[in-house]
Length: 203
Image (cartoon, rainbow, N blue to C red; front, side, top):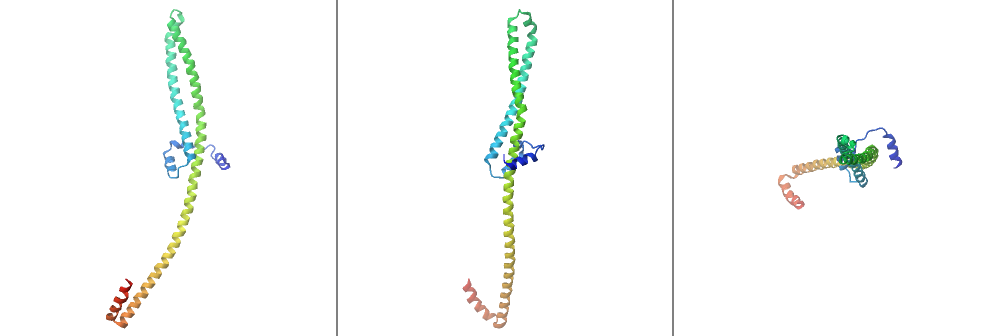
């Protein structure tokens, strides 16, 4: 982790960050920027941890249901097994007790995972947030530079456009004045002849 990441980590202590891969707006956010290998890797890692958490919770429910069933069976067979006359009941109780021990071992394992996973998910989630921020701020900075450059260009073009409009208007006025004087001095008939000669030549 870089020094800047550590600085952000300290600043973010105690701040609740939503699980990003479950947040539709986060997906829209990263969809606006170029795909990044590290973001994809962290996203996959976080999703894998979420799957493990979901699986652990499901397994705990299943094991608890199985354990309850085994204990209920022991209660039902307890009297017959204790009498020493029902070998089948004794064997069933013995098997159930062994299976209950196995259930307890599995429960301990999955419950330990349930306790451990939130810390792991939070760490990966924060790394994903920091990488997302880094990429987005890089895009913001680049876009801001482009926006400033485009604003400068537009400003220059506006100034040039204004100059050209003024020049165009001045030239149109000169042409109008020239034409008026020529008409007044030489008359329409003469001007028509020269119009045909000069204006047709231009075209």
